[in-house]
Image (cartoon, rainbow, N blue to C red; front, side, top):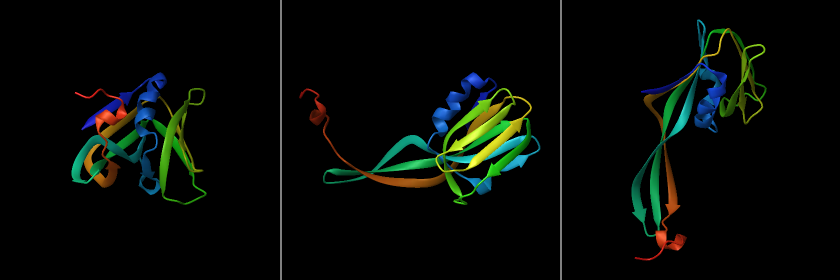
Length: 149
């Protein structure tokens, strides 16, 4: 399991780059003592070639479970007018004046977390959530302007 631990708000982009456009289930959000947890499905960079058919290739992409944790939580508020269930993350903003996090999504949902201090972690588990299969057209590298041997 790999993890990123951040204690400085200037480094929040490290996590935002990884979670952007990833999905999470709003019903799976947990708040244990002073820790706010969101389980996120992130596409693993490992792509496996499954099969070829004429000019097409089928690839398999694994969605791995990651857990985003915000520490030192006093309170949190979730306003979910759409009741979709599964949301797409855009980024996490931090307001240093009132020590609060805003989790911004593509859909209209408001998640605000008030904390005592700044500490965020993102841990990748070994749990595979879903396997996605994609077909792509096979192209030779010579079609993209590379010189022929």
